[in-house]
Amino acid sequence: MNDQSALLKQLRIEREEPPESRGGGSRKWWFAGAAVLALAALAIGWLAWPRAIPVHVAIAQALPDAGQGGASLLDASGYVVARRQATVSAQIIGTLSAIDVEEGEHVKQGQVLARLEDTQYKAQLDVARGQAAAAQAQVAQARAQLQQAEADARRYAALVADHLVSAQQAEQARTQAETARATLEAAIKQAAADAAQVEAAQVNYDYTVVRAPFDGVITNKAAQVGEIVSPYSAGNGFTRTGIATIVDMDSLEVEVDVNENFINRVRADQPATIRLNAYPDWAIPGQVIAIIPSADRSKATVKVRVGFLQKDPRILPEMGARVSFLSAAQPGASAATAGVTLPPEAVQAAGETGVVWLIRDAHVERRAVRLGARTSAGQVILSGLAPGERVALGDLSKLQDGARIAIEP
Image 1 (cartoon, helix red, strand yellow):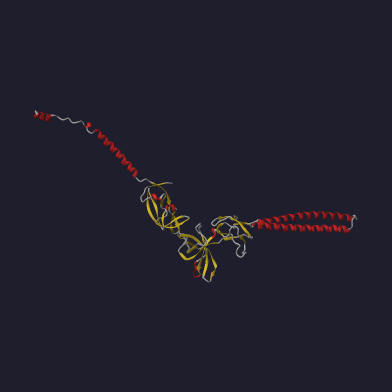
Image 2: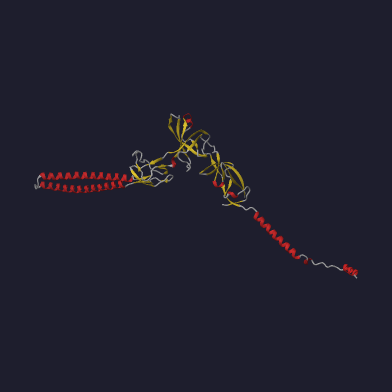
């Protein structure tokens, strides 16, 4: 019986389940997972793709040679001086009651710098005006008396002709008229003198206000409120002779001493290059103003004045300077290129060297450069960059070699 059961079991046909019933749900989940993974990969790739960094464009500008001339013929040292400066003081003695300026302040011609105590001078002006008014009253009185005396003289002259008064009385009337005329002239002169006294008192009163004689910068304030100032020294040194010093910065120039053995290399209007000791890499164009026609016997030198062709607020009086006197440029020769300039924001400076980001189509290229001085025209690039090349200007910390950029206007 058992053998028959085993035989029948072997002869039984096993029916397989249809494909849809075997793992159909799992296959759907597999496709969904694959789609999610593909989308995630696309998102990661999009996020990982480098975005274009927005930048502006700066163009390297050619910097012509500062001297506009040839080779240096002679070098000399000197100092920056101001041809126009003044130590302003009061023109009268007085106590300083106010100072309206400080060092470094720019002032205009006629601007009030300081004031003196004016009570005394105001009183003197009032007295002078009173005397002048009284003198004018005397003139009016004398003129009226003269008119009366002349009328009496004419009347007596007519009565003498009719024998109604004596000739002596007529003569006395004429004498009184002449006396009245002299009195009027004296009164007029006295009134003129009193008017002059008013003008003098007014001038002294105006002198209590100290004004700037020209446009400039205050470089020194020598007095304080409460001190006595005077145009001349007095009081055993306790009186100030100056209130403030004004320098006209537009009159700055360099004075150098040239050895008399080489003075033949210098001439008026000769081109020159000035370098300040404070900014040795900054070549400032200059020109010889004049050669002082006198030699210093003790030093065997001749003083030469050299002017700045470019003004800059960094140039200060008494700075040390070195001047190179240049030969004249050859006719038709172009000025030598001494480098290029860029906006300071386009350069990552590190001492005497720096980095700029050169624009190459839609990417940037790192470029090392050698830096010069920073002038009013911008940052000077001595080497590493040619005129006309374009560099990136913006947030340079985001850039790296080969980074994609988007140029903004």
